[in-house]
Image (cartoon, rainbow, N blue to C red):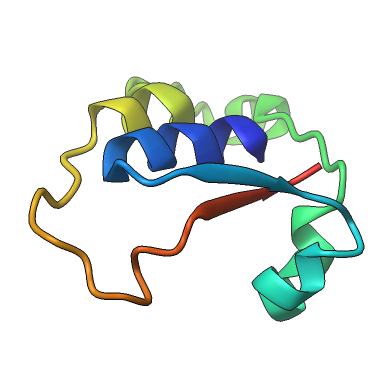
Length: 85
């Protein structure tokens, strides 16, 4: 989660701050439950069953290449990006 928030923060040119598990619900709301889980995943089964062979960039590389808005953000959008610890 931290690396994703850092890449998006750089793209949007906003500061990124780290939150404790206790602080996360007030920022993320119901999504905090999912943001704090360690859920490793693998595409091995999908690749095996469906013959899927991904060809695009990974998530971080894709976020780094994304075109972020360059104009001023509204007040709500300008809040620091946050990652749970």
